[in-house]
Length: 404
Image (cartoon, rainbow, N blue to C red; front, side, top):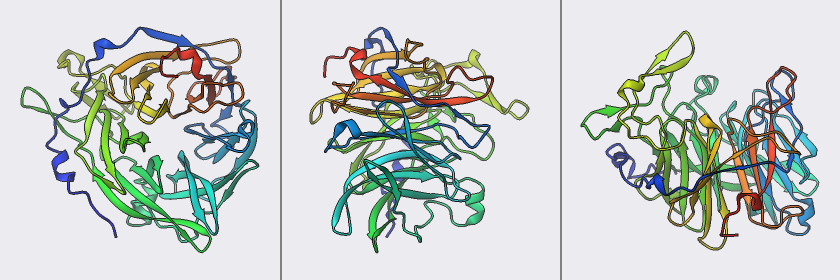
């Protein structure tokens, strides 16, 4: 049975004042480079468009760990720790894979297995794959339901599942062009995996200003300020959700429900700035002369979020500032700013621009003794004059942070 969170009505009354850290305490920007990269994907052919990664650690043989990345219309790509592609998985007809995350120890039949869960925004469904060192196998139930859409018309309008974060036996999914978040419980069904809605929550689309007025982020007519990048801190029971044009939110979870009013970790730089949709350019034209000065550091879109664990509650939260190709790092326990960094051209790979998804592990892997950070590169080079994307592999030690 679907449960709509009782806190939903309170969210609209929440201003963005609560929970915003003092950004002045952040350390100076660092410039690092990637150790390896995956092959280029070109959106003008079947190769697809890289978007979001996940890291599967092979507990029996860490050298055979995998990086799994979505490629939108190009499906999924699976890489080894050198960035070499070892598997390519096509989407179902009409599918478009957006985000990916992992679930460990899921009971399937008489075995406990690891799963890769993918949002298929083309079909408004989750696609679920069993993971082994040899690659991925589809175990999605044939009758898996729609996530959000009430019929095929909404699916065709792409009001569908978009961002994704997993924990325990649950997947938190955002709805494209909407402020809605849903929690879905994964369940076995006759040797396959399906899911059902556990809870829903709508983030605000309009926000109070200190002067008594309200502000809504500029969007294409008919669309709302959506969420994509998300991560769950399962040990703390917290979801971090990146509402692209607004802020990074912190929301408590309890079992399969949202259990607190969302609070802000940091706003986007553009928060509060009025803007008008320009139908000719397909962009919003901001009025910077009327900036109320309420924004944070993150240049919209706020995107990929991931957590580096350095103990039960210690570690770091990393978030992509897509608009200026930076990454912001926060203390996992307090959410206070720690540092920011960019990924520049280096001897082994080009730099990272306009990054979307990110994933990190603190597990020691071959070549990455303190952990591996994988980020999407939205402007891979050299590109031969074509749109090129891929994923960059970064040695965590290059950040020179204390909690390692």
